[in-house]
Image (cartoon, rainbow, N blue to C red; front, side):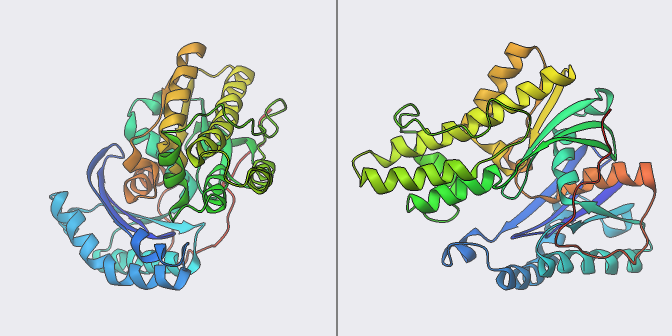
Length: 337
């Protein structure tokens, strides 16, 4: 089955063709980074207008590269939650129109579920390896999730304040770095000394929850007192290391507590090079199978939505066209006993 995936939850217009939930035939992403850079952040109205302008060209390119016609599409999967409402509406409206025109089934996909299934695109054996402990780490979410199968998730831990991606972006603004903040901070950190500034590791010694707001405050306080004495690269490297230390420690603790031997790290922050190196080293030490998707699959993209949609359809069946878009929506979980 060829699945047409559509993702417009934030500032990327993406359409993909994925076969049987595993083979990516195409995955086109039209980024809006340059549009929003002048504002120092994402402007919702600008994002939704750009989705309207770019959707048809992106759709055509995805079909052409995927060597697929609309008649060959067997299922349509679209992100409907959570995200910017205006942006979501563009993708959902287009998906519903295609569904009616082609008489094909449709499934509404939770954005975080898409991130989870990006790992299944990176390793097609994952569906045979349940249970899995997944770390979702992105701009708006930092969660540890136990996965028993599609739709069978238990929340092990979550951030109590800022997500890791927010910590990167807010730290970048404090350092005076341009948008997008997180990637620019990480690039600057590559030439710095991660041991130069002893930033705190929030909640690192307790439980599986996260907290990064104290780290942001510590950075602001340090900059006010330092007054330019310390090279920015050293500050950035130390700040990045503080975030990564917490993420690696918490995933290690979750794996040890659950005695699970398969893990995945997904979401935009999973593209961070330091995080990838540290996670891979931890996996070797713990003897676990670790999956971290390629950077293209870490950021918002339609291939992950198509993959999640494939499994949703085969587990739950199609959705009615009456489904809505939601700005906020938790990932449905059960209580792990």
